[in-house]
Length: 292
Ligand code: M7G
Image (cartoon, rainbow, N blue to C red):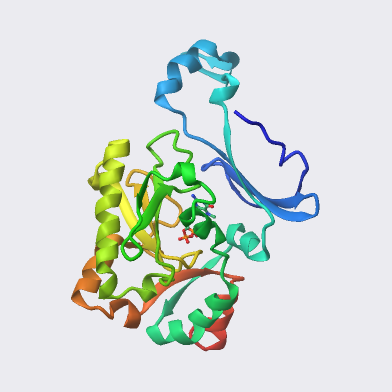
């Protein structure tokens, strides 16, 4: 395997968030002159590594009391990896995305979407270049586990970059549609039902075949608002509380399909609620419009 040294020049500026429970830390800093975000995360302990872990680790006694004792275990290096994500150059918006902040629930009507949200996201949202790179096989091509190339109903299924694929407990894949004209849930109409049904069916079949995880063990959903305005569907393990899988942001694909079956204009007209961070400029726009 190839080692790289992108992080040897990383200079920490601030910690955006960290969690002892989740065992991760989100750091904002600089790599040479560029703003960068580095995310470090300890990964779950895999059962199939336990024999090697117990055989080859160094163990240091910390304390012993009656039947109780605690140790520091130093496993072999390859069983002690830290999942690391780097965003560089990072924009101000990336910094805000990862900064721990208070959030507020906004209830967006269809009209709010068109007068407030849409103009904002058209000018301010994250680049979806990484999505196009995947669809055009310019990046992550070797990670694709399934593709339906149909320009209308087709999509690419691959591991989300939050999943290191080392264990199924935190399985996380995304299906990215080939069509480039659907920004989010709001754009969906009954004409998109064949696309959505195709994603559900072939996504579930592929995951069952590839990972032996049955559809009844999957949480399949869309985010509203998403961070990236190119339609994609999240497939996560039901046993894993993925960030963003709460009711204020996740819309189950099966509900979306049924709502569109009942009413093609469902997502055009309905109010949709979602949380916004305190310093999100979209929140300010809702305030200014007197909608909050
Ligand atoms: P989202 O709902 O638009 O935004 O989902 P969120 O990040 O706020 O949830 C986008 C999904 O794509 C997330 O689950 C990301 O972890 C994932 N993702 C983002 N990027 C930049 C990449 C990438 O470059 N590669 C892969 N494989 N997944 C990514």
